Amino acid sequence: MATYLFISDLHLSEQHPRLVRGFFDLLEHYKNQQTQLYILGDWFNAWIGDDQKSPWLDEMIQQLQCFQNAGNCIYFQAGNRDFALGQQFLDHFAGVYLPDSYTLHIADQTYRLEHGDALCTDDISYQRFKKVIRHPLVLSTLKKTPLSFRKKLANGFRKKSAQSHQHKKPTIMDVNANATSDAILKVDHLIHGHTHRPQIHLLEQKQRIVLGDWREESGEAYILEISEQGQQHYYKWLF
Image 1 (tube, rainbow, N blue to C red):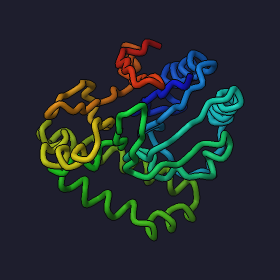
Image 2 (image 1 turned 180 degrees about the horizontal axis):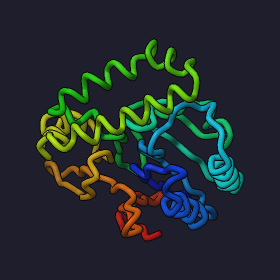
Image 3 (image 1 turned 90 degrees about the vertical axis):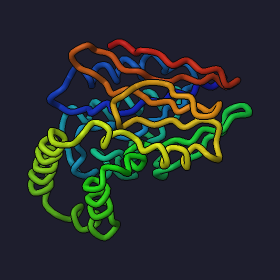
C-alpha cells in the first residue's frame, strides 16, 4: 500500500549538514514503504541552476536515486528559494516537476498542493518581485549567466529578503483569508508550507494543513503522512 508523504521548507545547503542528514534519514525511513514523496517548495535554501556541481549535491543525487530505485516516487513544487530548479536536476532520479498548484486525489478526498507564497497576497512587494523574477523570459536569461554571477545574485536576494522581513508586520507575511478561501473552494484539503507556521486549520469543515520548516537547532519539522485509505498522520519529524 502506498504512503503519501508531504514536506516543505527544508532549506538544504552545504552550510547546514544537519538538515541534509535529516533529509537522508527521512528517505531511509520511508524507503521501503512505497512512498510518494511530495516536496512543496524551498527544498533548497537557494538554487542557482541545474548546472551547479558540488560533492554534497552528488551525494544528494545518490540518496535520491537509491530511494527511487526502491520503488518510490519524488514530486517537486517550486518555492520562493528554489524556483530555478528544473527538470534537468529531477531527471537524475526520475523526479516529477509539478505546477505551482496541483490537485491530488487520495481515497475519496481531494487535496490542493502548493508552496504557499501565492496565498500571501498582502505582501505586495514580494508578489511584485515574484512576478518579475519568475517570468519565463527573465528566468531563461538568468540561467544563461555565469554561475558566479547567479551565486552573488542569490546571496543579494537573501540579504534583501532578510532585511525586508524585519520591517514587515507578521500578518503581512502570513496567508490572506480571501486567497485561502478561494484556494480551498473546490477541494477538501489545502496543503502548503512557506509561512513556517505549522498547524492544521479548519475552514468550514475543510482542512488547511500547514507544513513546518525544518529547524536545525531543535532538529524537528512538522510533516504529513497520508495512507492509501486516506488516514492522516501529521507529526513532528525529529532528526
